[in-house]
Length: 264
Image 1 (cartoon, rainbow, N blue to C red):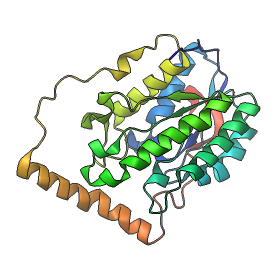
Image 2: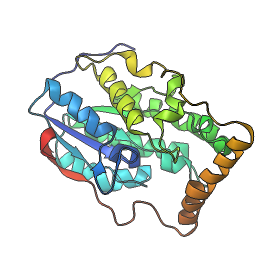
Image 3: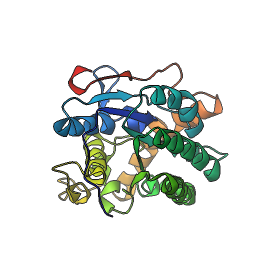
Image 4: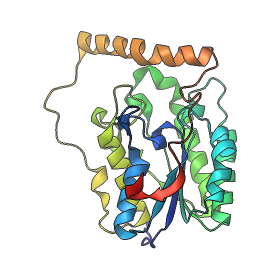
Protein backbone atom coordinates (compact mmCIF):
# COMPACT_ATOMS: atom_id res chain seq x y z
CA UNK A 1 0.00 0.00 0.00
CA UNK A 2 1.34 3.45 -0.94
CA UNK A 3 1.08 5.78 2.05
CA UNK A 4 0.70 9.52 1.52
CA UNK A 5 2.62 11.77 3.86
CA UNK A 6 0.33 13.27 6.47
CA UNK A 7 -0.53 16.97 6.26
CA UNK A 8 -0.92 18.91 9.51
CA UNK A 9 -4.42 18.20 10.83
CA UNK A 10 -6.26 20.74 12.96
CA UNK A 11 -9.62 19.00 13.62
CA UNK A 12 -9.94 15.25 14.11
CA UNK A 13 -13.38 13.74 14.76
CA UNK A 14 -13.93 10.05 15.54
CA UNK A 15 -17.26 8.31 14.82
CA UNK A 16 -18.14 4.76 15.82
CA UNK A 17 -19.07 2.32 18.55
CA UNK A 18 -17.38 0.86 21.64
CA UNK A 19 -14.00 0.24 20.03
CA UNK A 20 -13.66 3.90 19.07
CA UNK A 21 -15.10 4.99 22.41
CA UNK A 22 -12.21 3.09 23.97
CA UNK A 23 -13.87 0.21 25.83
CA UNK A 24 -11.14 -2.14 27.05
CA UNK A 25 -8.61 0.65 27.58
CA UNK A 26 -9.37 2.10 30.99
CA UNK A 27 -12.79 1.97 32.63
CA UNK A 28 -15.88 4.06 33.29
CA UNK A 29 -14.51 5.25 36.64
CA UNK A 30 -11.03 6.40 35.61
CA UNK A 31 -12.10 7.14 32.05
CA UNK A 32 -11.56 5.43 28.72
CA UNK A 33 -8.60 6.07 26.45
CA UNK A 34 -8.80 3.87 23.34
CA UNK A 35 -7.18 3.86 19.93
CA UNK A 36 -8.78 7.12 18.73
CA UNK A 37 -7.47 9.00 21.78
CA UNK A 38 -4.07 7.41 21.23
CA UNK A 39 -4.15 8.37 17.55
CA UNK A 40 -5.00 11.96 18.48
CA UNK A 41 -1.92 12.02 20.70
CA UNK A 42 0.21 10.81 17.79
CA UNK A 43 -1.34 13.39 15.47
CA UNK A 44 -0.64 16.15 17.98
CA UNK A 45 3.10 15.45 17.79
CA UNK A 46 3.05 16.75 14.21
CA UNK A 47 0.14 19.15 14.73
CA UNK A 48 0.34 20.71 18.22
CA UNK A 49 -2.73 22.84 17.50
CA UNK A 50 -4.87 19.76 16.85
CA UNK A 51 -8.34 19.69 18.39
CA UNK A 52 -10.09 16.35 18.80
CA UNK A 53 -13.68 15.16 19.34
CA UNK A 54 -14.88 11.59 19.91
CA UNK A 55 -18.58 11.03 19.17
CA UNK A 56 -18.50 7.21 19.48
CA UNK A 57 -20.95 5.41 21.77
CA UNK A 58 -20.80 1.72 22.63
CA UNK A 59 -23.42 -0.65 21.25
CA UNK A 60 -24.28 1.48 18.25
CA UNK A 61 -25.20 -0.13 14.93
CA UNK A 62 -23.89 1.41 11.70
CA UNK A 63 -27.25 3.06 11.03
CA UNK A 64 -27.29 4.56 14.52
CA UNK A 65 -23.77 5.91 14.07
CA UNK A 66 -24.94 7.63 10.90
CA UNK A 67 -28.18 8.93 12.42
CA UNK A 68 -26.68 10.17 15.68
CA UNK A 69 -23.09 11.11 14.89
CA UNK A 70 -22.78 12.20 11.27
CA UNK A 71 -24.64 15.49 11.67
CA UNK A 72 -22.64 16.59 14.72
CA UNK A 73 -19.43 15.48 13.00
CA UNK A 74 -20.16 17.57 9.91
CA UNK A 75 -20.95 20.56 12.11
CA UNK A 76 -17.43 20.29 13.58
CA UNK A 77 -15.95 20.48 10.04
CA UNK A 78 -13.12 17.99 10.56
CA UNK A 79 -10.14 17.82 8.26
CA UNK A 80 -9.63 14.23 9.47
CA UNK A 81 -12.38 11.78 10.48
CA UNK A 82 -12.39 8.12 11.41
CA UNK A 83 -15.51 6.05 10.81
CA UNK A 84 -15.52 2.53 12.27
CA UNK A 85 -18.80 0.63 12.60
CA UNK A 86 -20.38 -2.68 11.68
CA UNK A 87 -19.29 -5.18 14.32
CA UNK A 88 -22.50 -4.77 16.30
CA UNK A 89 -24.47 -5.33 13.10
CA UNK A 90 -22.74 -8.59 12.20
CA UNK A 91 -23.48 -10.00 15.65
CA UNK A 92 -27.23 -9.46 15.25
CA UNK A 93 -29.55 -12.23 13.95
CA UNK A 94 -30.72 -10.12 11.00
CA UNK A 95 -27.45 -9.08 9.40
CA UNK A 96 -27.43 -7.20 6.09
CA UNK A 97 -23.89 -6.60 4.78
CA UNK A 98 -25.15 -4.37 1.96
CA UNK A 99 -27.21 -2.35 4.42
CA UNK A 100 -24.18 -1.81 6.65
CA UNK A 101 -22.12 -0.77 3.63
CA UNK A 102 -24.80 1.70 2.61
CA UNK A 103 -24.70 3.38 6.00
CA UNK A 104 -20.90 3.55 5.93
CA UNK A 105 -20.75 4.86 2.38
CA UNK A 106 -23.23 7.62 3.20
CA UNK A 107 -20.91 8.75 6.00
CA UNK A 108 -17.83 8.45 3.79
CA UNK A 109 -19.50 10.49 1.06
CA UNK A 110 -20.72 13.28 3.34
CA UNK A 111 -17.43 13.72 5.16
CA UNK A 112 -15.19 13.59 2.11
CA UNK A 113 -17.52 15.94 0.20
CA UNK A 114 -16.90 18.48 2.96
CA UNK A 115 -13.14 18.10 2.49
CA UNK A 116 -12.22 15.71 5.29
CA UNK A 117 -9.74 12.91 4.89
CA UNK A 118 -11.52 9.79 6.13
CA UNK A 119 -9.99 6.61 7.53
CA UNK A 120 -11.70 3.33 8.41
CA UNK A 121 -10.77 -0.20 9.51
CA UNK A 122 -11.51 -3.74 8.44
CA UNK A 123 -12.15 -6.31 11.15
CA UNK A 124 -10.10 -9.33 12.25
CA UNK A 125 -11.49 -12.85 12.30
CA UNK A 126 -13.04 -12.98 15.77
CA UNK A 127 -13.56 -16.73 15.47
CA UNK A 128 -9.86 -17.24 16.17
CA UNK A 129 -10.51 -15.72 19.59
CA UNK A 130 -14.06 -16.98 20.14
CA UNK A 131 -14.52 -20.52 18.79
CA UNK A 132 -18.25 -20.32 19.53
CA UNK A 133 -18.50 -17.45 17.01
CA UNK A 134 -17.50 -19.57 13.99
CA UNK A 135 -20.91 -19.09 12.31
CA UNK A 136 -20.20 -15.36 11.91
CA UNK A 137 -16.91 -15.85 10.00
CA UNK A 138 -18.60 -15.41 6.58
CA UNK A 139 -20.24 -12.25 7.88
CA UNK A 140 -16.85 -10.77 8.87
CA UNK A 141 -15.48 -11.48 5.39
CA UNK A 142 -18.61 -10.01 3.80
CA UNK A 143 -18.57 -6.79 5.80
CA UNK A 144 -14.85 -6.31 5.15
CA UNK A 145 -15.42 -6.67 1.41
CA UNK A 146 -18.25 -4.13 1.57
CA UNK A 147 -16.14 -1.69 3.58
CA UNK A 148 -13.45 -1.77 0.88
CA UNK A 149 -16.06 -1.30 -1.86
CA UNK A 150 -17.74 1.58 -0.03
CA UNK A 151 -14.43 3.31 0.65
CA UNK A 152 -13.00 3.13 -2.88
CA UNK A 153 -15.15 5.74 -4.69
CA UNK A 154 -14.53 8.32 -1.95
CA UNK A 155 -10.79 7.89 -1.52
CA UNK A 156 -11.22 6.67 2.05
CA UNK A 157 -8.09 5.19 3.65
CA UNK A 158 -8.77 1.57 4.66
CA UNK A 159 -6.52 0.18 7.38
CA UNK A 160 -6.21 -3.56 6.87
CA UNK A 161 -5.51 -5.18 10.22
CA UNK A 162 -7.00 -8.62 9.68
CA UNK A 163 -4.20 -9.99 7.49
CA UNK A 164 -1.66 -10.00 10.33
CA UNK A 165 -1.57 -12.95 12.76
CA UNK A 166 -0.75 -10.71 15.73
CA UNK A 167 -4.21 -9.13 15.69
CA UNK A 168 -5.71 -12.28 17.18
CA UNK A 169 -3.06 -12.68 19.87
CA UNK A 170 -5.20 -12.86 23.05
CA UNK A 171 -2.93 -10.30 24.73
CA UNK A 172 -4.25 -7.65 22.35
CA UNK A 173 -7.80 -8.29 23.58
CA UNK A 174 -9.63 -7.69 26.83
CA UNK A 175 -11.15 -10.54 28.81
CA UNK A 176 -14.46 -10.20 26.96
CA UNK A 177 -12.63 -10.98 23.65
CA UNK A 178 -14.75 -8.37 21.87
CA UNK A 179 -12.79 -5.24 22.76
CA UNK A 180 -9.12 -4.51 22.41
CA UNK A 181 -6.90 -4.38 25.48
CA UNK A 182 -4.73 -1.28 26.12
CA UNK A 183 -1.98 -2.96 24.08
CA UNK A 184 -4.48 -3.74 21.32
CA UNK A 185 -5.74 -0.17 21.22
CA UNK A 186 -2.14 1.04 20.99
CA UNK A 187 -1.53 -1.28 18.03
CA UNK A 188 -4.68 -0.06 16.25
CA UNK A 189 -3.58 3.55 16.71
CA UNK A 190 -0.15 2.69 15.34
CA UNK A 191 -1.70 0.95 12.32
CA UNK A 192 -3.82 3.99 11.52
CA UNK A 193 -0.82 6.28 12.02
CA UNK A 194 1.16 4.26 9.49
CA UNK A 195 -1.72 4.35 6.99
CA UNK A 196 -1.94 8.12 7.38
CA UNK A 197 1.81 8.52 6.93
CA UNK A 198 2.46 10.15 10.31
CA UNK A 199 6.11 10.88 11.00
CA UNK A 200 7.78 8.17 13.05
CA UNK A 201 5.17 5.55 12.12
CA UNK A 202 6.09 2.21 10.58
CA UNK A 203 4.89 -1.36 10.29
CA UNK A 204 6.15 -2.50 13.69
CA UNK A 205 2.55 -2.59 14.97
CA UNK A 206 2.06 -5.76 12.89
CA UNK A 207 5.04 -7.61 14.39
CA UNK A 208 4.28 -10.61 16.62
CA UNK A 209 4.60 -10.32 20.37
CA UNK A 210 7.27 -12.28 22.25
CA UNK A 211 6.18 -15.76 23.33
CA UNK A 212 3.94 -15.60 26.40
CA UNK A 213 5.50 -16.33 29.78
CA UNK A 214 2.58 -18.65 30.59
CA UNK A 215 1.31 -21.16 28.06
CA UNK A 216 -2.35 -20.84 27.04
CA UNK A 217 -4.70 -23.31 28.70
CA UNK A 218 -5.47 -26.50 26.81
CA UNK A 219 -7.72 -29.51 27.30
CA UNK A 220 -9.97 -29.41 30.39
CA UNK A 221 -8.51 -26.09 31.56
CA UNK A 222 -9.40 -24.49 28.24
CA UNK A 223 -12.93 -25.88 28.47
CA UNK A 224 -13.35 -24.41 31.95
CA UNK A 225 -12.08 -21.04 30.72
CA UNK A 226 -14.50 -21.14 27.78
CA UNK A 227 -17.43 -21.92 30.09
CA UNK A 228 -16.43 -19.03 32.35
CA UNK A 229 -16.32 -16.68 29.37
CA UNK A 230 -19.80 -17.80 28.24
CA UNK A 231 -21.20 -17.16 31.73
CA UNK A 232 -19.46 -13.82 32.25
CA UNK A 233 -19.77 -12.22 28.81
CA UNK A 234 -21.80 -14.13 26.22
CA UNK A 235 -24.86 -14.82 28.38
CA UNK A 236 -25.27 -11.19 29.55
CA UNK A 237 -24.83 -9.99 25.97
CA UNK A 238 -27.51 -12.39 24.70
CA UNK A 239 -29.81 -11.40 27.55
CA UNK A 240 -29.56 -7.73 26.58
CA UNK A 241 -30.33 -8.58 22.96
CA UNK A 242 -33.42 -10.59 23.93
CA UNK A 243 -34.65 -7.69 26.06
CA UNK A 244 -34.02 -5.21 23.27
CA UNK A 245 -31.39 -3.41 25.31
CA UNK A 246 -27.88 -2.18 24.49
CA UNK A 247 -24.76 -1.52 26.53
CA UNK A 248 -24.97 2.03 25.20
CA UNK A 249 -28.48 2.78 26.45
CA UNK A 250 -28.52 6.17 28.14
CA UNK A 251 -24.94 6.97 27.13
CA UNK A 252 -23.70 9.96 25.22
CA UNK A 253 -20.40 10.76 23.55
CA UNK A 254 -17.47 11.13 25.94
CA UNK A 255 -15.94 14.05 24.01
CA UNK A 256 -18.66 15.72 21.89
CA UNK A 257 -16.80 18.96 21.21
CA UNK A 258 -13.43 19.74 19.73
CA UNK A 259 -10.83 20.17 22.48
CA UNK A 260 -7.05 20.38 22.51
CA UNK A 261 -5.57 16.90 22.87
CA UNK A 262 -4.11 17.75 26.27
CA UNK A 263 -7.30 19.48 27.35
CA UNK A 264 -9.77 16.64 27.57
